[in-house]
Length: 297
Image 1 (cartoon, rainbow, N blue to C red):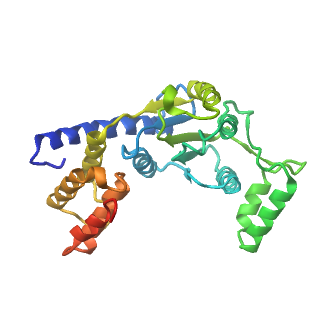
Image 2: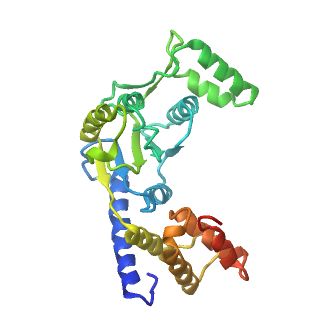
Image 3: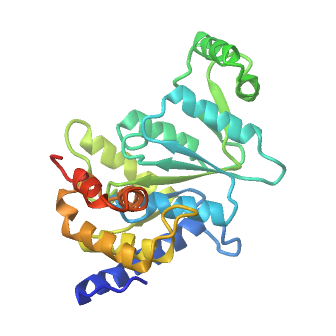
């Protein structure tokens, strides 16, 4: 691990190590990597503030364990989501599973009661259950989508989607018996204050049964824990393949980041990589690039 002059900073790195280890254990269970473990549920939710390794750890464990997955990020449209799911399930080999990672899913899954109900259906248990995507309630919607894909020469996507269109041509029904969902979000879903405004009570009531049927873990960390996690990960890895930062450079980077934490636009590991990129590409002026990452610059 990186060694800092400050005892407090070294203590935060130790705390960051524990955060990483605990999160990754849950992630591996959620990905089905630990085959001998009897899981309470097939699907899982990992929540926590930004900068505690939810996305980074999940992607890293997928690569290490050769997990067959698709990543669905916030902002994706319903029709593109259906396309990704259809292609992923259609291309499954015998005895193969598909892990669907819903990243930054606060609005995608927990934005309102309608979207929550959609994912409750999609994550239903049982081999006979079908994940229904009700936004495609008119055959014309699908026809237009197919025509667009065909014009783009993406015939394999059309073939995959058509495999899940019922005889009446309404909607897309994708079987979920070989799919597991891993939902990554920021909200503390066990906190009554996580939802506010119109419809908050309805959302809270709707989330409760979702937590009962899915494995759920909340990662808590303050500024020091978040920084410690980033410092721990950077100490164990290189931010970019083929470019090696020395431990002295890593320590300098993380010391500067801690000192300017409250003024940074972002404190996720993406910011660590941006700072490292400047260090690599602008060895004589990386402090200037770092200053631009502060609010108001």
